[in-house]
Length: 573
Image (cartoon, rainbow, N blue to C red; front, side, top):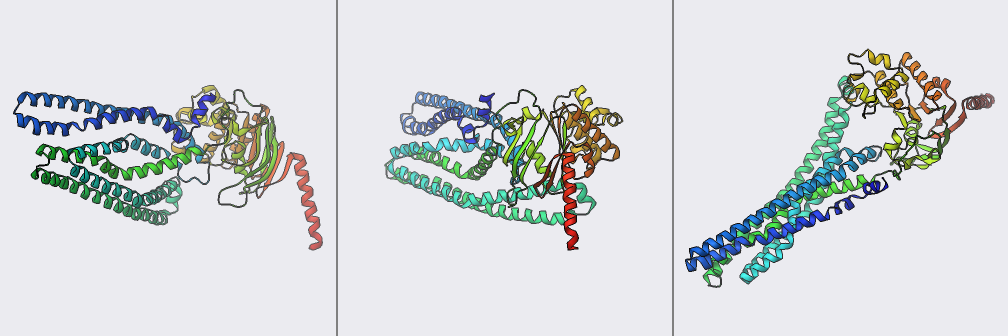
């Protein structure tokens, strides 16, 4: 397991480097292809300068059969390197898809991350470039000096003309890179901004429709989309200019090389066969540069995708290498926890410390915005970064892999997110459904009878995001999901926010049941009514710890504090 994790933790460049053997074989096949690209040139020379002079049919047949054989070998090499690149692309996707999938989820926890959902699109872009014409151009470019050398052997003037056009096309490729790189990057960011804006608003379509907000949001989206279109147009204009100039140079090269060859034939310095062969060979010599110019936009796009993937895969929690082999006892300890958010000077949580013990209910109280939900995410080890220590059974919680820790943890977030599937599948955490455990979790959440009233019972579908259910039903199913498998640590964030009296009574009963089973329960709320089930209280105010300890002691201390404050205020009145 440790070796597997070490492989998964490799950087993107290391993963790509692991495919060096496949690309080396592609390079060998490319060498064969480029060597045999000389076949048409040699064949023309033989036909014009040998067959036509000797009038020998046998020589023509032998030369033609040999040329056909070499063309067959060249076609096989082309096919082999294409197939190898396709298979390499599949292996590359398999090597990175799991890591990209996990990193995408982790990056959503990062408040500074804007578009982790683009990760798989970036992976596709990178894979397609690395297994397409861009790679062929990379392997073909080193053969340009070989072709130029053959042209110089035919005649120095032919080699000089080819060298001149090679320099010109190389300069065009370089200038194209300088002119389009920044424009392409800015355009991609603008397009992503417009797309992300629209996708984020579609998640709240009910509010937008009910309150007639589409018009205002359309104007905002239109401004972002117009900005993206303007930038895209400017970028395409630059790319189009580079492509047009490159085409002009290529057509001029074809004509000028033929003109120089004809001039040399009239002077008797080369044969007509050498003239035609030189023209074909010059086109082949400059084809890789032309291919580089043509694939330059894809190169820039894949370069940006590589940078985003490198950054995304670098966003990992520290540790995450150990596998939890046995259920924890549930001793949770928070020591001097400090949580900061990018762009905000004041910490969301500042020096928070408390303990939550097995067989007890710890209630965290505080007004909205005091950091309660951030505390919930932190104590579960899913906040991207913090200072201080979060210990589970005296071990840092961030060292465990999410898969091994998750089965021992139950979490009911403030915003309930259900997945398109059946009620049973959602309670079973979208894993293999254990019917007994699903029913047990539903009964613990006081949900069993309600589910049986659905037309298909536990097999009823909840719709995308639980759209077929009410807010209270979603919250109670989320509670059952948190209790599935009898986790040792259960964190409930505002679990009664959408519950009616019946649902809240079922919640209190469920909390008492979990406590009786010896589990550790942390219940976060801003409603004082949950104090009745508390064994310990944690009071937060503006991100700081106001009080922490056994319930009765904290309540008594708060009471005395209020009395003292009231007494101190009397003389002033």
